[in-house]
Amino acid sequence: MPRQRHRPKLAVWKFASCDGCQLTLLDCEDELLLMSELFEIAYFLEASSAVVRGPYDLSLVEGSITTPEEVERIHAIRRQSRILVAMGACATAGGIQAVRNFADVEDMKRVVYASPEYVRTLEHSLPASAYVPVDFELPGCPPSKAQVLEFLTAFLQGRRPSIPTHSVCIDCKRQGVVCVMVAEGIPCLGPVTRTGCDALCPRYRRGCYGCFGPMESPNTESLSAWFLVRSGLAPQQLVPLYRSFNAAAPAFVEASQRSADPIGVQQATESPWTQAVNERESANGEP
Ligand code: SF4
Ligand code: SF4
Ligand code: SF4
Image 1 (cartoon, rainbow, N blue to C red):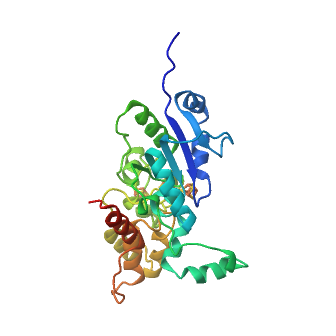
Image 2 (image 1 turned 135 degrees about the vertical axis):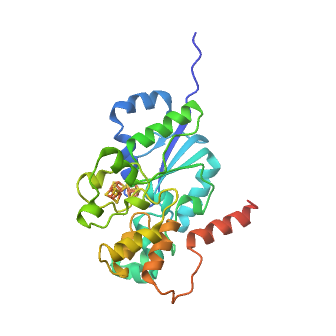
Image 3 (image 1 turned 90 degrees about the vertical axis):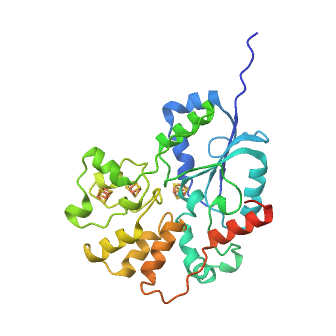
């Protein structure tokens, strides 16, 4: 009798999110059947209510950590997972909900909820890596199907995934897309944003709004100067550009703070993400 091949146990978890990253997995229509043959889909409530208990070989985490219960849950998931991957802008950089990191969360609760007294939430929306070690990150809001499939293939083959980190501009050049910023003066975050979408927005004559997060070495200072001088924007108009889907990403936090306070009146403070990572590392004796 042929021996049954070991299928890695896959779990998909949701935190504060819109479910769009999980839908990217389900959107792998042609590959989905093969995926279910190669992996044992052990926990994926968006796809099935059938649950297989851990430990898991691979955990994909969607969403940011925003409540005390979620902090406990991400620690429990980490303990049960051989490899833990943060998937999407929420899980890797706090998501759009991280705009609250720049305001008083109590004020925000009063504005958003009719009965804020029932809402128990943390002051900040942070990525999984603020609380637990993360083995790999897939950027994007949502991540691209191609990058998700490349990651899963690499996992099965036991090799490092090939996920590029260059900017969206390179994709524009490769595809011969006319630069919307140079040709039309439209503000575009493409020079500081990571590839993954094949320059989707510029192909439709829109500026990039940074949904794949910062590229490997983002020069936000130079781009902000271009926005001010060539696009005629005021410093305050740059703030929401950087505070969107990857609001907590350190490079965008720094760029938005520079725009919000161009003459450096406020004292620079450590970001809540950096604080959380430092606390985690010193508690665990990590280097
Ligand atoms: S990263 Fe974007 S698509 Fe994914 S859960 Fe967050 S908001 Fe939704
Ligand atoms: S349109 Fe945007 S992403 Fe494309 S080349 Fe111009 S600045 Fe770069
Ligand atoms: S061009 Fe920018 S905003 Fe548009 S999909 Fe790509 S990364 Fe996201």
